[in-house]
Structures are given as structure tokens and as C-alpha cells.
Length: 143
Image (cartoon, rainbow, N blue to C red; front, side, top):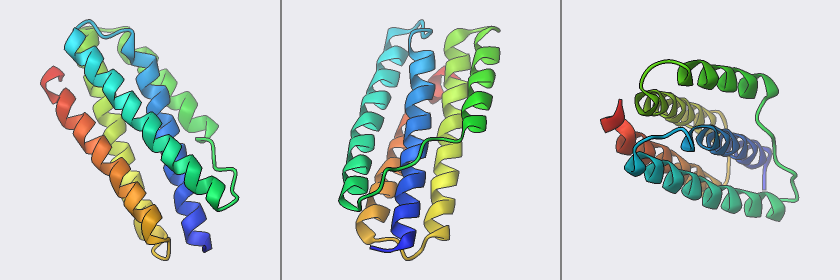
């Protein structure tokens, strides 16, 4: 175990938590049932990945990391603002697509920033990136 491993795991957990919170905020506003189901499946997948991340953190005797308060507040403000205008499903797709893009970009940055992280942790981060990419692709038709 090394410092890069813990730092990467913490950032991965914080990103997953942001994703879950974002999905929670918009699921009930979805009008189209198929979109709602896609969002629920995305949330379920994120919850599963969060469990895997927590298990690794426990194994490394670490408490993990919460998302930054400012990032959470800004995301919530953006979500509330977007949801007030126009087509709810298109706005949801736009918000979640932006969030997925941010998650993918950020996690790739952290993989590069923490190159000495254990392979098992890098594989987990790769699974999170794939989940983000899949969710983003599945909601594109609603943009």
C-alpha cells in the first residue's frame, strides 16, 4: 500500500458520491419512463461501485473522502437552475452528460496524478470511468 493508492481511492469515492447525489436529484423529475429507468440503473451501478470502493478503503484502513462542499453546492445550484426551464428530460440528459464528462476527465487526471497506485485500485477506477461512459451514451438520445 502506498500514498498514491489511498489518494486515488479517496478521489474515486468522492466522485462516485457526487454522481449518486446528482442522479438522486433528477430521477423523480424524469418524464420518460425509459429515461427514468436508465437513471435508476446508473445510480444502482454507482452504488455497487461505491461499495467496492469502500471495501478497498476498509482494507487499507482509510475513512475515505466526501465530495468538496463547494462542488456539491455548485452542482446543486446548476441542477436547480436547469430544471426550472424547458424540457425536463432534455435538461436531465444535459446535466448528467456534463457530470459524466466531468467524472471521466477528473478520474483520468487522478490516474495520471497517482501513477504508483495499486493495479487493483486503477482497475476499479477504470470500471467507474466505463460506467460513466455507458451512462452518458445511454442518455444521449434525450439531449
